[in-house]
Length: 121
Image (tube, rainbow, N blue to C red; front, top):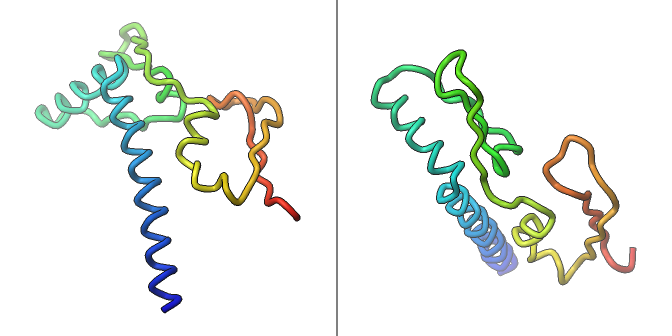
């Protein structure tokens, strides 16, 4: 019995996280960054030339790419990626924890670090 409850709760949480991440991926794909990125990848697939660059966390906010070797860097706006978006993904933790903003993190697209604490500990 406990195994079924565990599995059901696990699946609920994983499905929720998957749905939220999929939501933000769709928003990004519809942004100027995503609409610039998709044709690049499709052209590489069709021509079988080139290898896509790995995306980084900063590409969520702003995608930068050179259309050709030696060309100028092209920059396209992505989506907002702040503490609010991250908290939205992990909203299911709110009933059992407190989230506090604790200041800026260097080299991060997040404007502040979150401190996860369990009440009563």
